[in-house]
Length: 124
Image 1: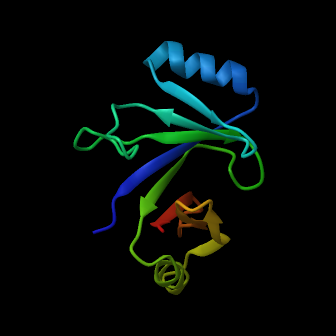
Image 2: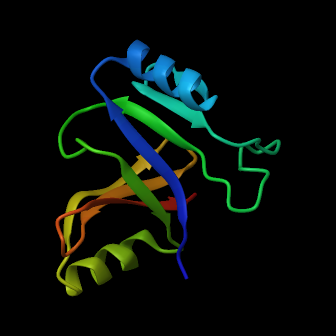
């Protein structure tokens, strides 16, 4: 069973959005220089950066752009290419295909049969 492992929240104004989530929910923010991305911590993490609490999910924030116009959940998969093929076979659509994310892993974005944008993630 593949699980939700990450979320992304788009913003129009980074400073305003960061401040809102930091003050409203106590979330931590760490900007990733040169990536236009902010790591969001909603729960304590272990030394590898993974949530230290069972069921905890951390995420990210990025400028609203392209297909990412609303919050996105990201599902961790063992084989990204196999998952993309399965999504298409079941009537979904690949919106953004496999792309490397540094040395951490690979991401892709798909639309489900209801038109929702879903992220997929495979660890390196």
